[in-house]
Image 1 (cartoon, rainbow, N blue to C red):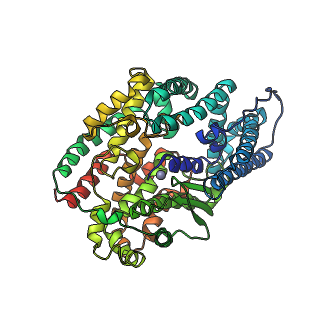
Image 2: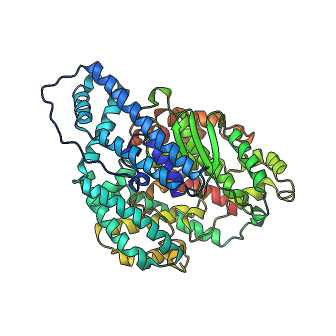
Image 3: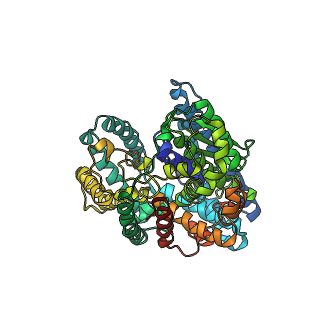
Length: 543
Ligand code: ZN
């Protein structure tokens, strides 16, 4: 469920402004405009108030371009007729190009420099806006225009080739593209931060403050606890989950989605739901968020948990303070934190027994025949069935982090040059055997399954596992502060949401990701996550 597109959309939401100059999704389509020659305007002094007005105008414009682009994507993915891509692509490329030109202009640089020089006179909100915008600006200008354009063309092509390679189980077809994408990522890492190891610079792009020195012990700690746990679960009898695959009519599933959104407290005057191939969340502002799902007639849990997952992303964006709207600080602050919220609602709440008991009577009204012989306990066991598998996006909560770990190990070695792209399949298969105990039958179900690398992203995967770990720590603190399970057991999530809003949502980008984590989790400690998994699966499987 935690699909790339879902998370990409979360990224778009999280980085309202960056999304215009920097999202992989736009890279494919941006027609790059050469920068205007830098004309220095020395001696020009701007009054602070005038500068702040300009800062507001800049951010509102950024919002407007972003909203326009988002609306075009949303339309293309949801209701647009099939052969209408051409005009939208043109509109997207013009809008994105115009914004890039405007944002990287010398005037923007002067404005941000001026405000940075007066930062002592700015309040916290303004200071953070300037800091973040300056960071975006410096980064966007460091990448040479020609390389930026070449990378857009490469990933656009690579994406199309990857689809063919995946369909035809033909890694050799994709290999030359992967080689070039790795080389580009190495080079870009040097632009992001020349003082860091290249993979550290890439990791920092997706979750600020993280590095290999952070992730290595994190993943080692997960492995040490999760691998034996999976082995123990594997020796137990598996629950019957066949009833999840009875025929669940899409019309009834749609009504069930409406009900789930109601339980989550998603106000339908501010949150819409659509249907797409891959579920995602697209946020315009804290009063207009769209989620999507995909209905499978023979799999009721798929859409159910997509709605709850995307609903979690939506809750985050809806909870950001009003004063941060239409600025650089609107939306969630990082990938890891966004994923912590979606996975919190999906797994920690949505796959808990109290929650399932609470919603089950209504669920039975939507699916009376399908669930006639099913109890809430049976349903709870079925949606928590843990079994090592090949595909990350279909993996259960327990085995999921190991899928992420395989990708982390491979990316790390690709970027530091100790693994050649041509050896990825062999390494992938070996690590799947070692971590998950499964034999990979072909590259389609192996190293070609995800679109991230074809889209140019290396360093993205680890945030998925990190979000889960953040969530477990938040739950522990939440349980300390409030009665979580009493209200959840009555289908009332309002206290859960209020806690998350207070500790995470309202800040948007006002705090650094690490400070939000500290605020909601305390000191980061992956054993809290592995303790949570151990407790949960010991109960489920009577270990
Ligand atoms: Zn997600």
